[in-house]
Length: 184
Length: 306
Image 1 (spheres, chains in turn orange, cyan):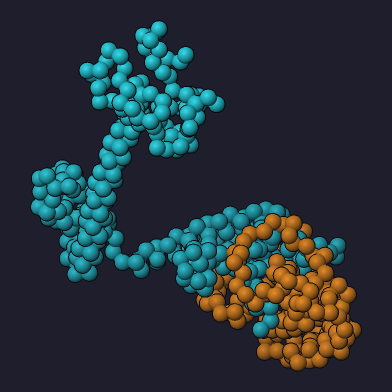
Image 2 (cartoon, chains in turn yellow, green):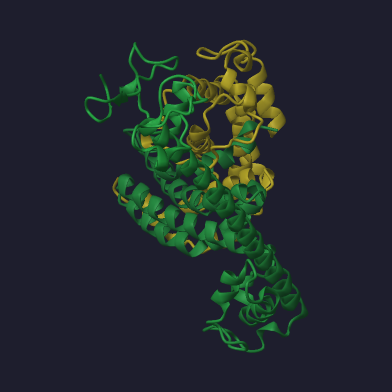
């Protein structure tokens, strides 16, 4: 799946997207330390710092959408979801791979606080593709997919997610059914 | 490695306040569908929970203790579960009703509780790793040490004042709250003795320092008093110029040996020293140091300015 997505992304994304510098790492001195441990890890930020108009975030989102719809990766995604062992795994893994590829293609320029928004947005797109392809996208499946994707992110960075998984298991899945029918 | 993997831990830690806006953005579409709504709630609950349980407090305390972010995070995650999910359940309920501001507030509340719990857990672990604390483990051993210290000090010893303080603690008396049998462990005994010697060494060192300081202060006071006395004599009975054995009339018997000694320091040094001669007495017509000393005036029958 990842290979297909990357193939679709490679062609249209050869040139830098709008809003993205040709070499973002070279132009943004703050980005030079991306690989370093952030001494401010754990810092709480206010709502105003969540700026979805961020150029890097918009470029990443555009890159994903172009790959899915202009590059016709959506068809591959649909086939991948249909052939996945279960809908939850299919949705979670597909969204995870797309987010990871987009993140790499944008050279990690998406602000940290927008990574979750990016992940949720892409998972939403993947889920809509799956829904169109007849894949089960019930509320509980969607919630479980998001949970798996999040746990995979945390697990692959070396965190022991055992206790987090246990705590997550305490959530009554029916709340997501209620959410789907709730007026918002 | 993708940045998403590296950066998500920072995002987890930073999301507590921002989660409300994040999910608001997710649900910002006018055609909010089922998928968006479900994912908004899922993000609130699961990602918010991860933020709460991501052990930001534990991570901070762990980093401060030098144990690193990872171990602190793990410890804090374990400690923060109950607090985290209390706020999380409230956040989920709020999000389901569309009140994302309330959801963010609930998450923040849980976040704070988890933060404190995580930090406490790490601190407790660090304390345990540093060994037995003398104050909590060894009341009897402290008494034993102070008894011996009494013997060592003796009457007239420079540290007798310290020994005196221990006489209010009868030998063999445990401090309130002591636990019989607690010192049965060899490890505890060893730690107690080691800690006792450290305390004793500190007391002795402190006593020595105190005595040395007092002696130095006494020497300085004596020197200062002598200087002030000399300055007073010079002021009242001296004469300008070199010391000449000048004796005030009618006072030869009492002050026969008084000599005027011009100050060896310059005006600045004298002023800094706070002597009797101040800057107000310096005049352009003064001596080589600028001081205009009063002279004996026979008409007045005393020293004074002409």
